[in-house]
Amino acid sequence: MSRVVGAKAWRGETLARETSWIARLTDAEIADVEQALAAAKASGKPLEAITRDDFPLTAMRPRLEQALADMYDGRGFVVLRGLPVGRWSDEDTGLVFWGLGRYLGSPLYQNPQGELLGHVYDHGRTYGNIDVRGYETNAYLPYHTDAGDMVGLLCLRRSLEGGLSSIVSSVTVHNEILANHPEYLGLLYNGFYYIRREAALTERGVSDKPIPVFGARDGVVSCRYIRNQINAGAVKRGVPLTTLEQAALDYLDECTRRPDLRLDMDLEPGDIQFINNYTTLHSRTGFVDGPEPNQKRHMLRLWLKFPKAWPLGPEFPAHMGYKPAQDTPVLIEAEA
Image (cartoon, rainbow, N blue to C red; front, side, top):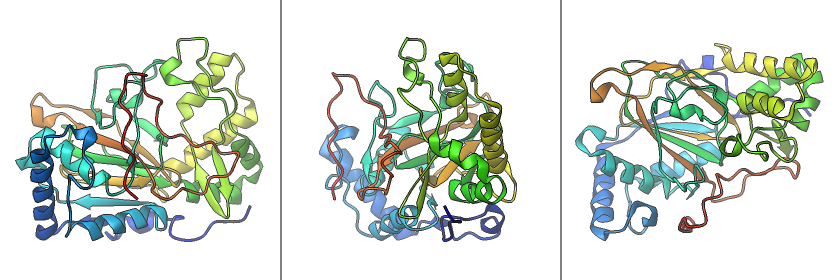
């Protein structure tokens, strides 16, 4: 394996000095979105049934096509800025987010209950408990990936304190490991057993086989990583990580946190952050909500599948959301 070069191998210290990754929406694009929102509401369809035809865009389409190209072929992320969420209800904002997402890919289920539009806020649960997912808490979340090709986060409201979003190129992290500790890469490519969070308290609470942290195909490096689930998987199996495995994961974590590699951003209400889940790890700082409704951090989340298959190696399993309960309606695939 050789060093990966190109747009995906970005460094945060470079991008922090410019704003090419922020796409500020024009008045014409916002007007187009509002017309599409009106059309979608007039259709009378539930959110999950809304397709591109029900959310017709014209001026906004080139912006979304560029966002998709940036995620697939470019640096792997983009921030769309300027949606006027203050003049919409939360429900209408969710419909807008869903409608925009239909132009990027197929929505994926975010839990076994069949949730397609996720709500990320403090549910009052305790981070670190074996059956608790991080987005249900107000805790710091280490750098990780989600299930799907793309992850979208729309900021409805910010917290009173904290809640800073941060991303890092997993391709650049791979390059750093290759340059400084190549002896770790074999372990990371072989992978680790994961806790199955939704079944953590059952006998089938661990993945059937190790899941690679990195995989490569045709020179494209992909990443899947959730350290807490690896740690919990080792505990569940009763097989502690070896000293070398611990060192490899610790060094990976150290790289993700480096100020010269990561890119921090304070998402504003109306911002949408879209990332390529295979080339970008994401994190957030802990946060404190205020007493007022507009001081309680609330993000909307989409997990999406690329219209064009991402080049995954045979040893790197796809993870396309969760399998829904049997009584959950089957989702319509995104248009090509």
